[in-house]
Amino acid sequence: MSRHCVSDDEPETVHIEVHLPGRLDPARLRTAFRRALLMHPRVLMREVPGRRHRQSFAWELTGEPDSDPVRFARPGPDALGRARARALTECPSLALSPPMRLDVIEVGGVKAAGELPEAGLPGATRTVLLLTMHHTALDAGSGLRVLATTAEQYGGSAALPVPGPVRPAPSGPAATGGTGRVVCARPVRIAPDYRPEPVRARAAGNGMLLAELPVPPRVGGTGGLAPWTVNDQLLVAATLMVGRWNVSQGRPAGPVRITMPVDDRPRGREMPMGNGTRLVEVPMTSEDPRDSDLLLGERPDLAAATRLLRATARRTRALKSAHGAPLGPGTSLLTTPLLPVGLRGTLTRGARRAAAPWTSTVLVTNIGRLPYALDFGDAGRAKAVWFSAPARMPRGLSVAAASTGGRLHVTLRWSRALLGDASGAYLTGLFEQALSATSQVTRPGSNAGGSGPEADVPEADVPEADVTTPDATTANAEAPGARRKARRPGGPHDRDAPCPDPTPSGDRSARQNHTRPS
Image 1 (cartoon, rainbow, N blue to C red):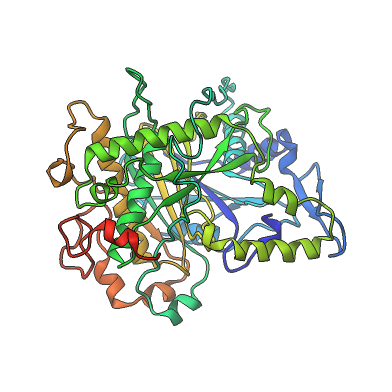
Image 2: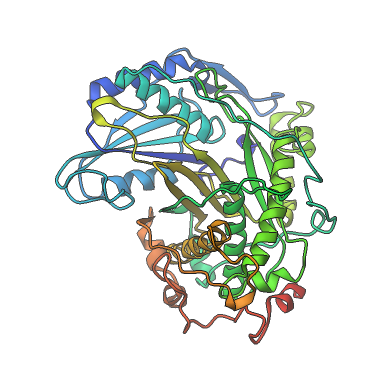
């Protein structure tokens, strides 16, 4: 499916950043990475050229890399920014084995954007490993497994056993959480920002922002209540982010549906390489329709957030436990080799355009606590790991999260045809505030029975963040209105910004907005 829809305007890349406190030896790293590739031979794959009338795409294992995928970046204060921009604009070739590249960036002197404050001593040289993969061939789980094997080969440490994911037994309806009014609802779209249409039409590629946040507390099941995980809190935070963003743009609130990858593969060296996740869609609507006003207020109601968290936990537990086609029965039909590749590609792209209004609102992918030590010996252990997923239209936005060293590393990635860099930073701030609000529900002493504006929800902490701008001319061409609404991520909302009041006491409530067409 991905191969049929490959586009140069929106590269299908997955990027992984590993921040190390020390320096790496170039020769040792090249040797370790090569050994890691040989230990995972399915990574050494490439597409076999063929004609459009063939029945299916053909892939072959090469046994050896076609070229050296390791590249050491030219030192400089903008080296990391250039590498990130390249990861968003230049996709590794499917015609060469392996369909990935590893950029090694040395950062010295002052702390680079996106690095931890304790990343290293002042003046010390640190290292960032930036792995870029073609998502048609590989995913983030496969890339992290290759990096973990590289760390084992470089540091010489024995690999510890890595437990695989444990799925609970399904309980309750998977898609609705007890109600039947969510499944058939058309999901709301993320509203585009205020940039002029000519500027938006010329925009290409993705923008990206990295943030570091506290890990929200996880709640276990007590007294028959459904537990919710950090992943459930990320889904709820993304829902609140979309709702508040749309209302601020003068668009109605509506039902949010989130695409969530589920990875059931083992995490050890026997992990199958490739695209091993199955995509499920989680409807993010509370069972009580009156909760929309309470959640989209300036301070989300804790009781309403608790109800949404419980409903989300029931849905995600059932979806993770169920089994089915990775992309559903429709895509299984499109990938059946009954017609030539060229004709099936045309049908696939047409079906994708026709299904655009029903595409999920946002993609949220969470690896959770990193199961690998990523110990590179004298270069140290990984202090932070970020990764990002593609953000192609019509969805146009993805949220990726991983936990390392007790901190949550979140990446927002968006299509420039939908949002500019200022809007992406503003949206990230909304996500941080929403995640802080959901964390209040799980903290000891929190008043989960509070209601409306009286619920005490403090502002989120301001993280280290960095907006990646591959094309500076696009960012500078944004409309002044979009820049006026931009704010520091995690800071308070601009009360002077000309956006509608989403609270029930405002000129137009979220419930009234809900009745308007999306």
